[in-house]
Image 1 (cartoon, rainbow, N blue to C red):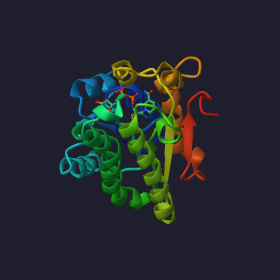
Image 2: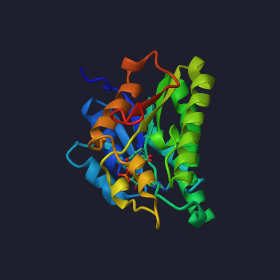
Image 3: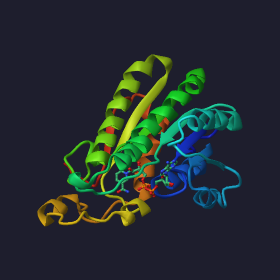
Image 4: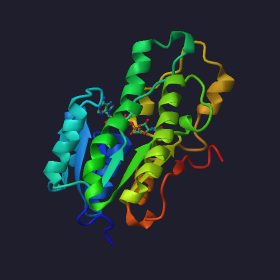
Length: 246
Ligand code: NAI
């Protein structure tokens, strides 16, 4: 059964990794999807071979005036919104002494403020017929992760934001849930380098529990939370980490 037949979905971060896997999975299950990302070439690659089921929409989540306009544009293109998946994110390991304020603002700006702006702009559209929002945190937002202050703070914020939205909007027929992946094999992790002088004992705690997860394994969890299969699931943080933090 196609769980998303007739559903209209917005997926951020759709040009790569987990966001790409999510956009493609929702499209395969019947949704029409707007994929939002700053990376136009990546979006085109995501949309390839799907017969227009994924429509690219270029938007930088750091552009605070563009984001609400882009969400409205997505709703106009699709004729409404039923599902919003916030997947875009950035990160990186830093020594706290070397963490610059600009970099801190950029990480919080994309991961937390970007998620909030998308949700805020999506709410009026979702209210019309009810709908589902899924956010993407990280086990860095639930469990202590070394050299990850800005990223952890942003993801802890995403979790708190998710819970607040979930209780505020449930009577409007809107469910809001969160996935918290552990290490997943995507370009984001390939770009990560350890900070100078990193303590090997702390570094060991960052490593995946066995093999890293695959983008499709997180996309499957996002799709579950976005679907009617999760009709009585609201405000949860679903870890997708292979048991690393169990
Ligand atoms: P990725 O790097 O493959 O994809 C991230 C996407 O976000 C990219 O397409 C990128 O262009 C987009 N993006 C970045 N900045 C943006 C901006 N300013 N405006 C619009 N789009 C922007 O990374 P991945 O792994 O797929 O990450 C997806 C989410 O999963 C992120 O929120 C990340 O924090 C989270 N996550 C990833 C983990 C991993 O190990 N890969 C672990 C835990 C959480």
